[in-house]
Length: 65
Image (cartoon, rainbow, N blue to C red):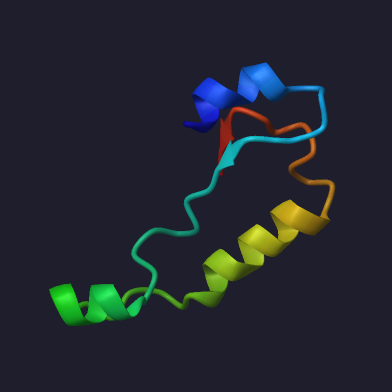
């Protein structure tokens, strides 16, 4: 979705970025449905905080992180 939306909004303020926060985060669904612990969910939260508040993603429209 970000690769389709990104070029249309690039340079106009909003940024469309696909975020894969380390895959297999330890959500309740993953634990109960597949019996897998997964990774710490804070990994995903930290990436989203950096994306929202920092400059790291300001020119990353249509990218995947």
